[in-house]
Image 1 (cartoon, rainbow, N blue to C red):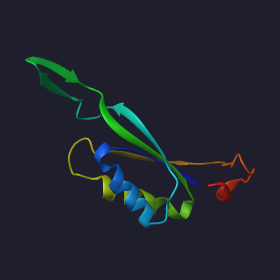
Image 2: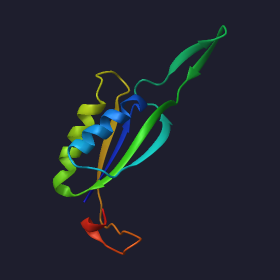
Image 3: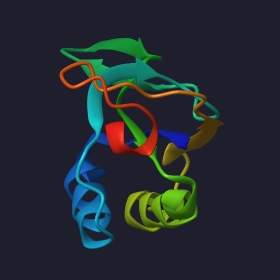
Image 4: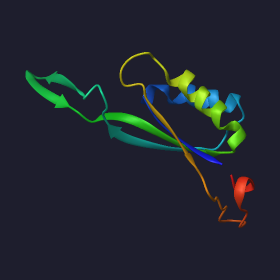
Amino acid sequence: MQKVEAIIRPMKLDQVKEALEDIGVVGMTVSDVRGYGHQRGHTEKYRGNTYVVNLLPKIKLELVVSDDVAEAVVAAIEEAAQTGEIGDGKIFVYPVERAIRIRTGEEGETAI
């Protein structure tokens, strides 16, 4: 099993969800997060004052999938979330040693 964690632009969430549904992935955890990378935030003017916004809103997706689907999940997220501009986000893939469904006690891939 693999955990796929992606940090994407909020406006791309629906496109990423559709892309994942198209390849048969239905479960994920979505969190609103803030952060910055190479773009280092930006400045905004409001009523004549300049403000530095260095923590930008992002969406964090977390999915645990079987090994045979992990590359397809990464490819789907990458294709759906890409705009070609700085700030598109990152994808991280981690091995998952164990998964347990609390309700039934199932373990391994049947738990996901």
